[in-house]
Length: 163
Image (tube, rainbow, N blue to C red; front, side, top):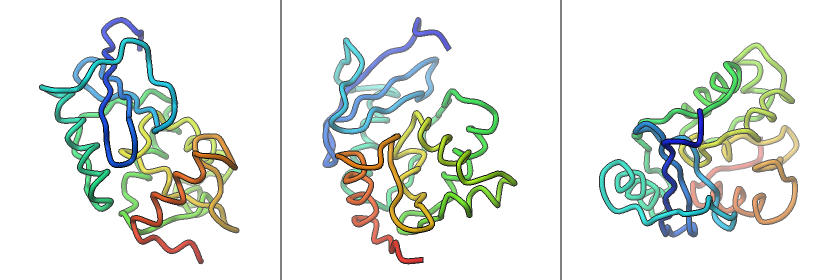
């Protein structure tokens, strides 16, 4: 996918300010709160951008909100298989990297790599995947604000980390 034809938006949510990108009438990327968004982000007010903003805001208010958006995450065939599997994990539940890997005939490290590469956090809920021994990382980090956001997202969904 080229950058040409991509449009960048920003919207406030209860989780923080989110930036997202649409390309060919599909959602292709979301930046987590606190991360710098793409340049020239514009407010999302109408059309698909308005609907994405509405659904992101709804998720910010209700952690059990289920997204229904046209998405086109860019990744390898394996990454897309992992992301599809993650969308089946309901709010309030968690799976370990190993459990997801076994279901896909893979290994935990590969699932972790796919989670790290997830361009649509929240919509593809990689925060619901944890390490066998605890929380695990989030957005490629094992400490810091991203991991605290993961902890906060799981807590507001009522997920239990003890396995």
